[in-house]
Image 1 (cartoon, helix red, strand yellow):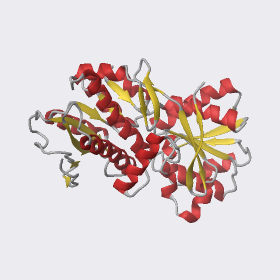
Image 2 (cartoon, rainbow, N blue to C red; image 1 turned 120 degrees about the vertical axis):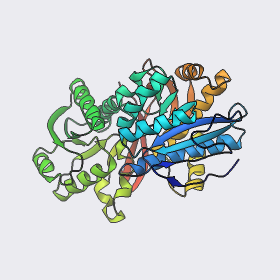
Image 3 (cartoon, one colour; image 1 turned 135 degrees about the vertical axis):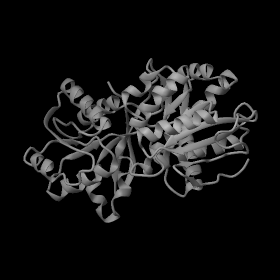
Image 4 (tube, rainbow, N blue to C red; image 1 turned 90 degrees about the vertical axis):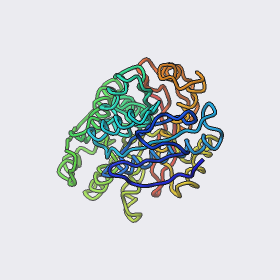
Length: 381
């Protein structure tokens, strides 16, 4: 097996885990061609690089241990920059190349666009981290490893009600983001059932940097919790500006908070102190699978693995399990095996519901002293 090689060619990165033809060549008998795509450059690269590192780590391990069905995995990984048009182009290139299964995409909008194509082609597709509910509705060969936006919103209500004893909540929603809206709307709906009063809902748009106008409105209301369903960059700005104006409410949020610590200098980590967010695993979980993965990732990349890394790592091993269960890479057989999977991975035990969404528990992470700490395990009720 060749070592991983890294290079950027136009908008794509091609990683080859063993010998064989590059994109556009014919399927070789001794390899299993696995396609993948994610945002390796651009604003969402922190997620894409982390996820694809998890993909590569799993493939490297599998190849070192004999591959799948006696064949080495050949990975063709393309950069779609978090853009739907780029994602569709990348998917079509991978189909021309001859992939038998697809790991992607990393974020929701590209995943939605590609899922419709993959459904039509019958290619088994697993998004590690695309949380938008509609992704898996494209077809019965489309799967996800992560939980959905609405599921996170419901779990956050349980967190607020049962763990924090919250009676009031305010929500800041990114009106440009389906992810943010999906979590927020589920939180609002579930709050009515759980007796939490939503006392304020404030909106903003992608690219906004100043949130003090919205936060100042919350100051006299003093909500028990402030829900911020967005990605790490906005989360860090909102938390910083809230503490600047003296807002002391408890912050909670979904898995987009993963990575928030890296966005701030260590001298500013205090603004994140005590924040709680839903996630897919905890790096300090003592589970044997988790610790094997964390150690291997650190050794390979000299960095800490995020949830995106762990989800993508599990996605590869799920494909391996399905292919070995049916003894082939036949797309229909593999998709059927995935629908029936009973899988134990780094991100926990997983089976699929009728929409190919995972049935799994959620890990709650607490930020303490500039570090992510395992807090608890919760499920939606």
